[in-house]
Image (cartoon, rainbow, N blue to C red; front, side, top):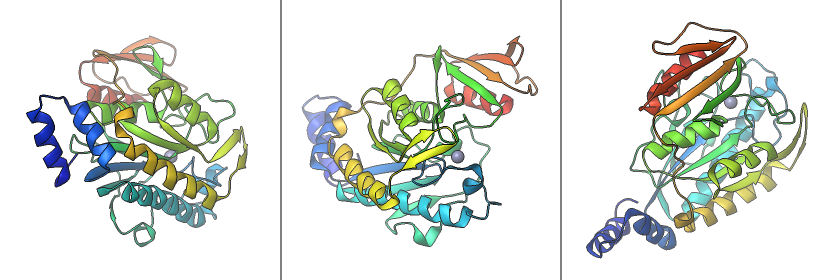
Length: 293
Ligand SMILES: [Zn+2]
């Protein structure tokens, strides 16, 4: 919750001795002054089916990056309709330079470029945001029927935190959760939609396609964009439904990889291609993951 009516509501709510949850609910109901963070990947965008379509060297890449930009813009439009006044779009795929700046809705700010910060696809998130949206997301490594299913790198077999096997959406939601910000809407193939519902419980989803391994049965991109607009708006208008995704520290990571890389300081090799690392600081866990993935 932010300026204007947000500040007013905070003052009223704090005055009444209510908690943040309450003020979030009020902001959601009023639908005003929201600050929204949109993290955008490419594999889950409507139409995308093969790796070359999301690789900058692929002949179809320019077309699919335009679809990616339009799908992100649909989420921006949905957020604006719910009263968002500040929207940051984080380009999260590959080189992080996929979204076409002047094709993106002009009310959003665009965060592009690679970082070595552990936030990575969530670079820019902080406690000033009210809600997070994931666009173009995909299922975790090992999801047999998922479209372009993987977890960060093709080398990862599985990543778990505190015994919970998670996709990229899982650790990105945990990063948002560090700042108390809930993930309210996820768009991607049916498999990632199932995975985030299982992890987060209360989360709105838009299925862009049904994954059948190397094939996908897809909805028309404009139909998907219509659903993203409507679902984003309804989720943000009902913000009190959603809570931040959190696991209890210490965060115990178990990482299984195909090809071993060098051991991150403090990590332990627990078997062939298997490593564990534990920390009270989740961002440090992400550093260890990024070094060993
Ligand atoms: Zn990606």
